[in-house]
Image 1: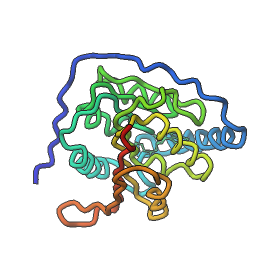
Image 2: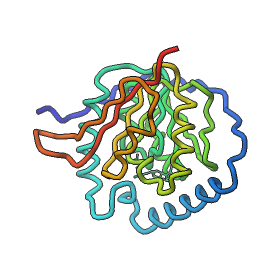
Image 3: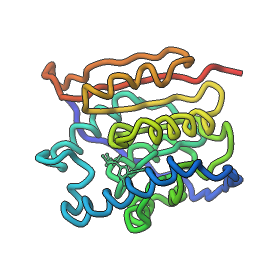
Length: 221
Ligand SMILES: C[S@@+](CC[C@H](N)C(=O)[O-])C[C@H]1O[C@@H](n2cnc3c(N)ncnc32)[C@H](O)[C@@H]1O
């Protein structure tokens, strides 16, 4: 089975999407956000690049496997505006960017964002400083969440991000969420109201890969 992933480059097109001005988050969710960032800062200090994987996982092997799954689900479809939500240091940016006219890399650490967009001329780094996405309503035609929603521990903060992802999604946008925890199976419910919500347990070479993959589309206008 072919496992190599090609990453064609597109022309440099730093088109800006107008920044959405979000009302300030309620203090509870804002506090949860600050705590999540602090805990992720400790985690990244302790684990370095391996922080993006699960404790005990080999993040390089994991990255190869997820890259294969992601490339497969994305296929060769082209998207105008893509969002890599919680992109980390950019493990999957080349795969996502190769299929997008422009891609937004969003995370809570500027140094990781710098790395994520470094080799992607048509990418914009988007530093999250509060529990909202500084992106326009209905602006994204592809939204990718690789293990980010699942790693947000509190229900209120997670719900806030889900509503933000749905707010920035364009009509008919493709949503892809890959996650490792059984407990995150409720993902299917949080994306209720979308068209074609489909969850499957991922296998690679007929072997269980340990991930769930959710695909969904927002309803067309
Ligand atoms: C499990 S890692 C996955 C990173 C990347 N998607 C990958 O697979 O390489 C989760 C990511 O979510 C980011 N993150 C943590 N808390 C967040 C929050 N409250 N809002 C947005 N992103 C957050 C972390 O910095 C981290 O990059």
